[in-house]
Amino acid sequence: MLLYVKRLVSAIFFIAVWCLHGYTLTSQSAVFPGTEWKVRSPESQGIDVAKLEAALKYLESQCGDNGIRETVVIRNGYLIYEGSDSRVQHPTWSIGKAFTSTVLGLLIEDGKCSLQDTAAKYEPLLSERYQNVRLRHFTTHTSGYDGEGGDRWRKTPAFFGDWGPTPYIPDTPLFPPGSAFLCWDEAMMMFGRTLTRIVGKDLKDFMTERITGPIGLGEWDWDTEGELDGIPIRFGGGNVVISARQLARFGWLFLNRGKRYQGGWRAEFAGCAG
Image (cartoon, rainbow, N blue to C red; front, side, top):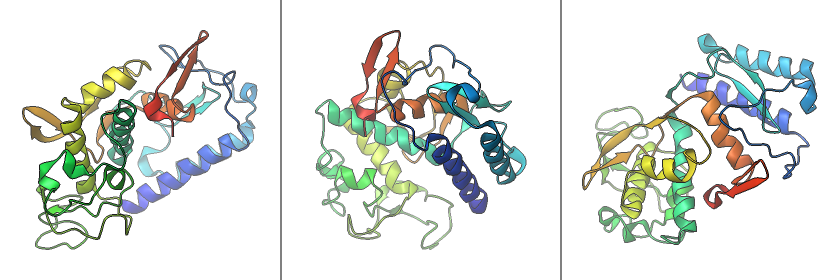
């Protein structure tokens, strides 16, 4: 499974880099979709069809039984290729980490917190063992956070897959904050819990109001992991249920640095401006 994921990510990266090589985003080129993506031919958007087909063929060779049925290629804000299952929704694993960090960007823009704030300022569970961990450590995977129970790194006392049974009970840090990088689900889960405290509401509702609703993403879902004062805690490590077409809309917003141009109107989503 891990090899499959690595190959898939590598292939997607290859296509993305190839399609965007030499591409400069401008207000004129930043077309954002309305209810549906506008379809254009690859040639009309300056894409060499033979090279695109070669890239897609390579991607298909690395994707096992799934093939490229859910692949979407966007150029200049237009849909130039889509697989037959591009509208199929399902959990997307770690892609959802981008949703979690987008929440942080919006909260910073709102003045609710800053990257340099300690997470323990908002989440009391972190005050004893993680008092020096800042929000920036969580969003850059350098917090060193670990929850009680087995995990895939030490595999003791048991192996529970990608996270242990008690991710919100802090255990001994894996390393001092900022000293190493580890993309670890339990850290992102605690991050999601901390952001839920700051927002004071369901993170999915927050994202729907601020991002997915305004950009016309449509219906989507986000798995939960426990509750906080009656509020569902969204799975900070991912598991957003979404389709390739919808995800392309979210990604295109980021490529536009949080700006959406449509009919002369521009909306800025500062939390998406990297």
